[in-house]
Image: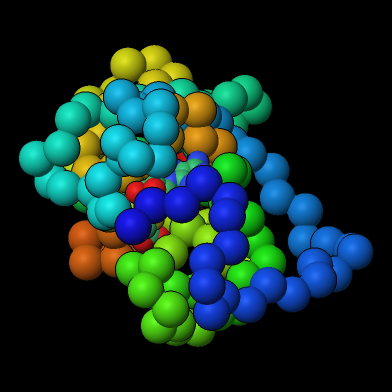
Length: 163
Ligand code: SAM
């Protein structure tokens, strides 16, 4: 069941620490068809709509080589989530689970991850299928899917010859 920011029966909130342990840099913005949490899918699907990852400068050159991969891992900041619940009632039925046993967007650091299919690249915009986040969600990182990742071969003799 989707929530806005309400606390449900049986849930437990804590006081958020006043300081941050790390500063994130948003590398872009995600464009999707969904403007409300009621509409967004719980998890993305490989046959879901094409969504756009708009990469900000100065990070655009970091896209070089991304076209080598069919699947990418997208990491994003679920910016509308509350962050202070340690016990949650996903079905709003008084039964609770700990936040770290759920993939709920409500968590101390509301990071979402999805494995997506690369559809295309248009300049500084990456087109993908398989997302579940709201339009305007900040983009934190983009990586090749672990399954697709082949370590680079070790350097060979002659790799660095200039003449
Ligand atoms: N796939 C990610 C994961 O597993 O880490 C996110 C899963 S989370 C269950 C997806 C839900 O988060 C959506 O159905 C929507 O209700 C909510 N959501 C999507 N974008 C959000 C945003 N920017 N801020 C807060 N909640 C969001």
